[in-house]
Image (tube, rainbow, N blue to C red):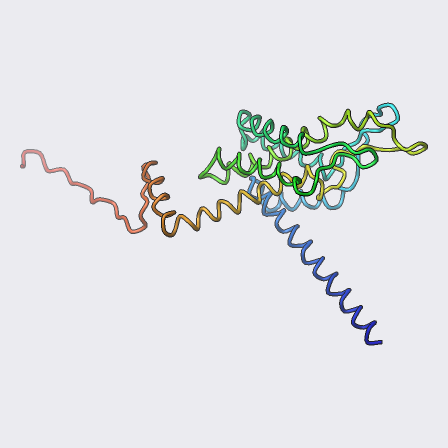
Amino acid sequence: MAEEIGMSVLVLVVVGIGILLFFLYISSLERVYEKIGFTRAEAGTILTLTLFFGWLTIPLFPYNDWWIGISIGGALIPIIICVLLLRSRRVGIAEGGIGIVIVATITFFITRAEPGVGIVADLEFAFVPALAAAFFSISTFWVDVSRAAPLAYLSGVLGTLIGADVFHLTDILATQPPSGELVILSVGGANIFDMVYLTGIVAVMLDILIFWMQKRQSKTGFGRVVHEFEMQAEGLPYAKDMTPAPKLQPGRKGRI
């Protein structure tokens, strides 16, 4: 009896921790969408659509014995978000294109097609595209997280989509699906846990973390000296206790 009670308590604790982690993950997703330029209401709408409809796959077209489809949450919604970022000019075409090429090239070499499974990457390389997107965006906009975060998201999502799913699609289609079964190759099929989805999210989270560390470092020690130098170089006041110089009153005409 005591063992059964102990097991029940353990199960409840594990379930509770799982629920807590899930809600923390959802909360972090909302913060990511706000950082790339959406309002809280828009971020909530995106999350609601992703969670409730994201597991659905839309069939697009047949190819031999395969059906090619796209996941609503894992690929379609992130692609729409990227289009909105480009249309609103939160991401420029030039830097966006460079970021996509960099991430797509890296993703292509660390992913592979496995028959019966799909496009996969070894666990130790799974977040390399996110790291590449984050560091590219930070190196492009070192002092402006409002521009770095959208660039990181777009580079991560579209770069992973092209490098993994598009470039390796022919490798999967060259294999035969299980006989007697209707198989749909779903782009972004794992929804909020898919590599396409996660790369954009993790890249923005890394941007947020690095900018937070940069902000803290700028307040103390050598980081403060560098920060003050950067602000001074831009012609901005860099000391909190700096007071503006008094205005000179011009003398009246005819007086020395």
